[in-house]
Image 1 (tube, one colour):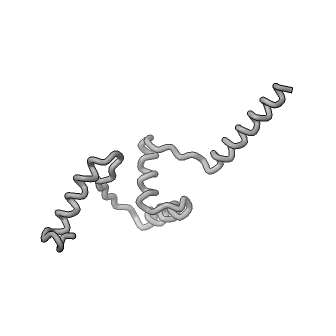
Image 2 (cartoon, one colour):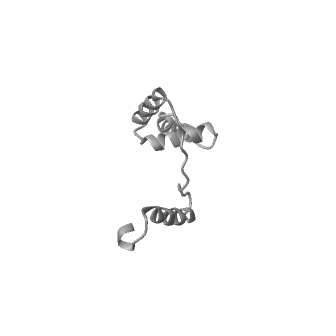
Length: 96
């Protein structure tokens, strides 16, 4: 696009970021953090475990630490299904 319109790549990115900031829940801000090789390996292992990208994993860890993001345990869906099932059984027993 930069070549097509005769502008720098940075101009294209700046324009895109200004547009993205108008959208709800935009991710136009960049946070740069330096970590040790060991910390990066741990982050990558967690990303593989969660089946997420490194960036998504780092974002969730950061937001969780800030109290913004709450991680549900893997069993949350199973517990909810069992709760509904027990509730239905209770209604049946009550009707009987």
